[in-house]
Structures are given as C-alpha cells and as structure tokens.
Length: 273
Image (cartoon, one colour):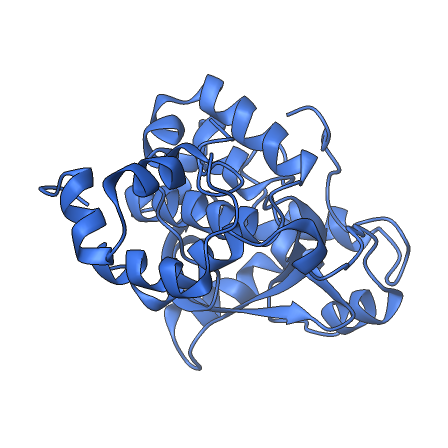
C-alpha cells in the first residue's frame, strides 16, 4: 500500500514485522484465514482482491480439482451459432479464444489472429486502433489474467502468456506488477471496426457450468442504435462470409486458431513475472 511501510502494515494487521516479511517473501505458506483477512483490511483491499489473496494462500489440496479442459462442448457451439446478431466467444483463463461464432470472428477481423485477447491488446498493432480506450482495455486484460492466476497458480498456460507478453510489451510488464485483480463480469466497451466504424458494446461474461475454467463472453447492442445497425452491416462483410463457411457445431473453433501454445504471497505472489 503506497505510503505505508511494512512495519506499519504489520502493526495494522496485528502481526509481527518479521512474520509479515515472511508472508511477502512466500516463506510463510500457511497463514490462517484470520491473518489473511487482517492483512487485506490493513491494505484496504476490495472484496475481489481480498478473495484473490485468500485463494493464493490455499494449498493444492484445498483447490477445486476441475480439469483444465479447452474443449468447447458441441451444445455451446450450437448455442453461439444461433445468435445471428450477437457476437459471442469462449475464453480460457489466460484469455485464449477457444471458440467463437461468425459475428465475433468478423468483429475482430482486423487483427492478425483472433486467438488471445491479451496478445491482441498488447502485441498486435491493430489493438490500439480497435480499442478506443486502449488503456482501460489493457488494464482489464491484465487484471483478468491476475484473477485467473489466483484460482489456478499452477497453470502452465498462464505462465507462458505472462512470460511472453512481459517480454514483448513494457506496458504489460508494468501493469502486471500492479497486482490489480478484476474478473470479467458486466461492462461496456467502445471499439472501432475497419469496415463498420465505431461501436458501443455492452458485454457480459458467464462461467460455463461443468467447465469453470471457461467463460462465455456475449456482446450486445442496445436496440435501434447505430451499433445494432453496425452489427447487421458486419454480417455482409467478407470476413463474416468466410467464417460462415465453417460448418456450425463442428469440433474446431470457429476462428483462426493461431499458435496457442507459443506465445508471491504464500505460493509467492511474485512467482510469475
């Protein structure tokens, strides 16, 4: 917390300075929930960051044993394909795009690959033109990956994405060091598509039952708005027609696949770069 020394945080949390230093360095791996809550209160963390801190202090036996499955169910693919005027896609914990419907592919057709949202923001030249509030999009991406890391600190894929983007982008590395935490939920975004212009999009993210490592992201336009009209124009673009050529409900993601695999509290909150 800016302005507070370690000794002051320890005093506010009711622990010794030496104990607090061991926590920071990852040498104290089993603090009680009461101690974690006291430190979170001393640091004035919000509810989401406090939950993240508690999750970081769990050991492997306390974590849910959900498999890291990147296969998207055929039923979910058919559901997304049925939303003719609604871009929708599935992301994994590291913001890999696992599947998408035709309108979502067309919406992101200005990027070299529609494969990983964080890579698209930080490592694709199209990102700064597409996201009209690039700084907000960048902070959101990093905070979402940080939140996912708290649920699964052993994720090799998150480590790869964080490592590669930290090397490729000073902005990513700087934001990662802030340790901000915020999962996907409800929000709005302003983007600019090369063919249909500016869009003001409302979006919501939903955890997939049966595969909590996946999230369904749904973009919507308010009725009778320029964005709704732009979504309809998007359906006439070559990018949309190319995506439509892929048969609905196939096992392959409806998107260019890209190269998905190449891109320290308690468990040591700084164990990733």
